[in-house]
Length: 241
Image (spheres, rainbow, N blue to C red):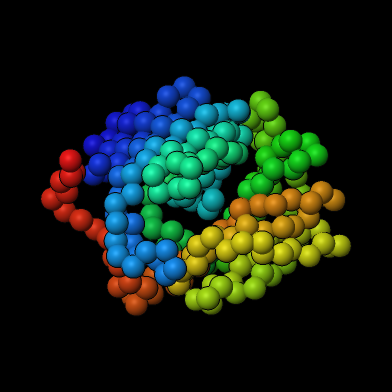
């Protein structure tokens, strides 16, 4: 089910209200070494409340087939679920959307993306560094203040990060005098990884959520065969009581 303000997939849903995004999840969690040996149901709710909103949208390719829009650049999140110690947690949040008319691997080699908060100014800093399939790059470096309006600035050169377990590389913008450091690895797959990274931008230290997408690997037939095991596709879904 999909509408202007509500989307439901199986028993999970996302609902948008003025200044607020409500997410309900009811999914099967896959096995994870050291945490669980068998799939199990995980349910809960996420409430994201905006501190600032933005309607800005940015084309990522010359043909405007791929668009990125940072809807809630500054926000707060409350997460509630039996799966977390103490029943959940609360903290800083961010929400954006990507949409397009073509598969990303048709137009990109891959990209690096990062988002963090400049503790000195309180601004949200977002970096996008996309490598186009047929040459060229799309680089975005933006700051978002309390009014949600984006302000562009010059992105420093990128510095390479250590490769992940599956060999996915990646880089993050960093001042010449700085050295980026991976603080925590959050997601590591054959074509995508997400990490918490310390870097330095415009003379200010930042801790950023960093993502690398390798579209060449995403298009690899072997990786395609693995996707259903990581993201199961189910039909005839029935919610248990």
